[in-house]
Amino acid sequence: MKNNRLGIVLIVSSMTIIALILGLLLQRQHAAQVEHVRIQGLGMLRSLVALPVATLAPPENGPGILNSIFAYRDSPDFAYAAISAAGQGNLAEVVSPGVLVPGAAPHPALSGFAERVVASTENARSIREFFGPLPSSDGRLLQVRIGYFQPESLLSRRDLPFYGLIALAVFLLVPLIHLIIKREMAPLAALGEQLRTIAANQPASAQTPAPALDPTHDVRSLVNKLHRYLDAATVRIRELEQTAVANLAQGRLLEYGSNKMQAVLQSLPDGLIVLDPAGEVTFASGKVEHLLGMTVDEVLTQPVQAWCRDPELAAMLARFRNTGLDTRRPATVEFTPAQVADKRIWATAQPLGGEGGANAFGTLVVLHDATREHLARQAGNDFVAHVSHELKSPLNVIGMYGEMLEDAGDDPTLRVEAINVIRDEVERMTSLVNNLLNVSKLEMGNMRPERHRVKLDELLRDAYQQAATRADAAGIALTLDVPRDIGAVAIDKDMFRISLNNLLNNAIKYNAAGGSVTLSAQEDDTDVVISVRDSGIGMAPEDQARVLEKFYRVRETGPAQRGGHGLGLYLANQIIELHHGRLTLKSELGRGSVFSIHLKKMPELVEGANVL
Image (cartoon, rainbow, N blue to C red):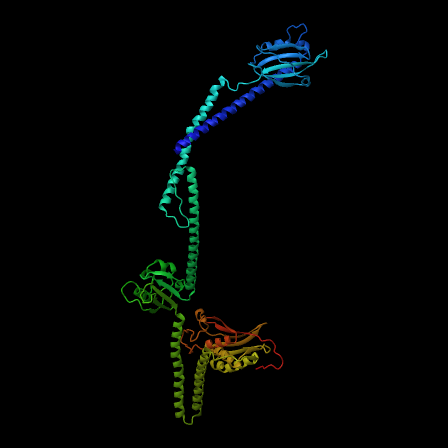
């Protein structure tokens, strides 16, 4: 039914278009004929008025040029030609058969060229007349009149084939248009079928019910239903967009939390490795690279047995694989990495279990750099052994010389020698005990400097005099280079003297006979720099980096091994830092060392200030 209605509409439309085309063509043809008659009439009129009257109409009523011109006319539309005089009729005329020459036009029309349509009489055609004034030598009012039949028939037999071809061409376009429309409508039909399928298979929500699609409706109904369906789809899309925005916000929140947790784990000072329940690595922080000497990619992409080259760590990680062993208790191992030989690592594995203790989430392995603790523990053990030796040796010497005093009798030389040796050993023991006590006070926070304005020149000269005796006994040349007018500093005089004595003692101790030690001081606008320079054994770069650590002793080579307990420089540095200063070191192995104390100068104090 819908296709028949469409065919009728196409036929009626085509017939209407044919009628309009024919009407326009006929109208155009008629207008062209009228224009042709006008051009022909006005042209002939202008030609005739240019001739004399005597030539056009001779007086003897003989044949004139007017008869000659129109005798052989070939225009089927020609009706008549005449020369009229006012009140006298026509002086000359040429008339087509069956045509009566109408009366002349009124006199006002004689002022120029004009035209008029003479109404047709019964069984006669209308005539379009063109007239104009004709000059006369005798003063008469003359005019030339030419008439042509008015075109009336719009359709002639000779034009029928042309119009028939046009109508046939237009009519043949109807089936072509019908086929094109049918082809173009096919996607709409398919779309309607798809929409019906979607509407049948997709349940509508309470807010946006799906529109029903009737397959018997036409395109307009389909478009209307499609419009409603698109509205419903738009509402559904908005709901999905809102859901997507909420999911995106939730995803970004989770991503932010994950990134924050990653940043926290990466910023921890210890290396972290996370194992899944199967024992494979799922996460490794960047600190692992420095602790184990391998990249994070190697740890994450390779099996444990492939990247782990340390037997202790590999054995501990194997315990947390699915081997049936007990994995609910933490484990700790200490080892030296094969790739980083100068480090000592503590590896602690902690199961990531639930409340029941089951290994549900995997294992967390913490790698802690225990190098300092290991070295401190080793240095502490060495210190205990060394201090024991340092205390045992003087006691043995004191005991031996005590026995000599008992057996010396009245020998004064032997008695003086024994007393001096006993006094030196007691002083050595006292120095060691004092250093131990001072270090203990420092670490417990009980040593706090009482700072006063001190004349630095007097303090340095006093330290120089105390060290001069020891330098002379060791064959060392001790030199003092301090300006008399050097500025004052705010320090605890007694505490600071401990630092100076320890630096001077080390410079004399780690020197050779015939060497030199120089105690100097200089100042600039803000700082005072006290330097202790020696020409002793010097230090290697690795010793310079650790020489200020507690219990650390410089490794010596050769037969001359100097005793020490590794507390002098540590104590000196701690005291200098308590005074907000800093201790620097420049040393070259075999060429001596320079220790420099940097202190801030004090401004000039008011009169009456306490100066020590």
